[in-house]
Image 1: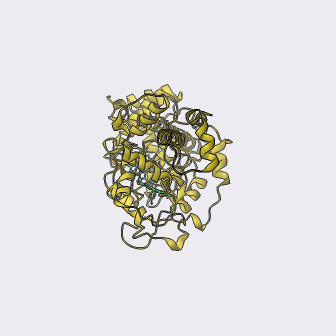
Image 2 (image 1 turned 120 degrees about the vertical axis):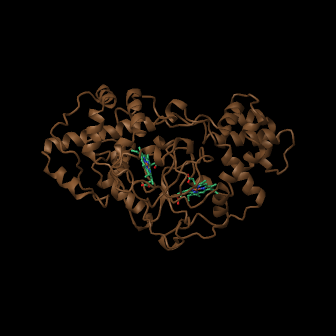
Image 3 (image 1 turned 180 degrees about the vertical axis):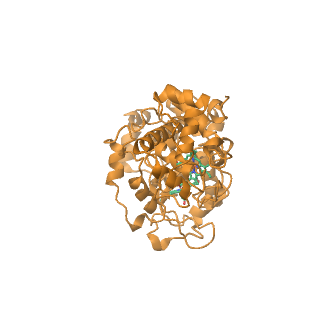
Length: 429
Ligand code: HEC
Ligand code: HEC
């Protein structure tokens, strides 16, 4: 055992008598070993896990098509909105506005897309079980991009550049010649759909509707292939740990002493690790932090309680006809999902990597700064939703001002290098 090698006979002595004052020359080695074994639960960031429900997920050609779709305002109802409107690459693929505006105003904040491919539920309430099915929501949501399925698919297939890229990735494409100009099916999830569009959809032959659905799912799959590229490079924390593991000195600025103390608080007294666990600093699950409502009133957003149901009802779910792995683990997870009232008001744990450039924070952008987030966890002042089974784990922490600063220094050390420019910038046509 490595620890024993560092400590020699002191190891036995330390365990045996539980002394609290080990000799000074040995103590740093113990601390370092303990630090490294704890740190390695969080670093390095592994490669993006495969998504078997999308067989094009790792295709570069699909990512290049998705890149173009991500920035294309022609997919929206008013020709002016793209995914990048709310997921701004210069703002950590998130939105500087607390609540997003598209065709209307959203009740939630647009979360970062950085590292979203590591999750298995998507949206603050987890209303989708794959990135590709998630992407189809905002395209048709009347308060987001307000587009419609037939017009979106026709645009992709008939635009010279997009159409040839689509065929290169997915092979044959349907002929849109006989389709109406616009059309989409009614979904339980979306309110305010244009009744004319719904009627036009219902009047289409079943075969055409199936072809549109298939191509629409492919649009989502290309967008996912692009989103899978949105992974920042190593952070100061990652570099520091990698250097120590390799026995290198490294750059002292990568992980200052304050950040190290902050890491101890993070996994100790402050208990952040209970939910912000693993290399993404998220358990990928749902919790109620009691973050106060932006409006100041009682919470109204059902969060996971609603999101889980939508995932189970989605036409484009992992277990559905458009999935490339309908019997797989993702499909199973959605099928077996049990939802009770205790899920009301729970939201997905966000990643804590690359926090600095993507304020404001939380599902409504309630907090403008990280200092405010830490203050909230510390004091719990203004916490809401206790009547809805709020997590008992969150209690006031009584941190000193130095400890708050240390926690912040730790969060700052999680800032990775930016996503490669070729993906962060709009594509060159
Ligand atoms: C009008 C603003 C707006 C536009 C445009 C928009 N989004 Fe979003 N996006 C949001 C909001 C708000 C949420 C949170 C929604 C929720 O919780 O259900 C979100 C959530 C997401 C998520 C979930 C991330 C996670 O980790 O859970 C993904 C992925 C995403 N959007 C991708 C896209 C893509 C792809 C497009 C373009 C097709 C797009 N968005 C267009 C506002 C927008
Ligand atoms: C009980 C689980 C849990 C614990 C413990 C927890 N968090 Fe969170 N954290 C969450 C959830 C869930 C959200 C999203 C809440 C929302 O949007 O309402 C969140 C949001 C955040 C955000 C905002 C990120 C963003 O993208 O908006 C930060 C920063 C954060 N937490 C840091 C911390 C720190 C620091 C600690 C320890 C003091 C901590 N969290 C403890 C679950 C937890």
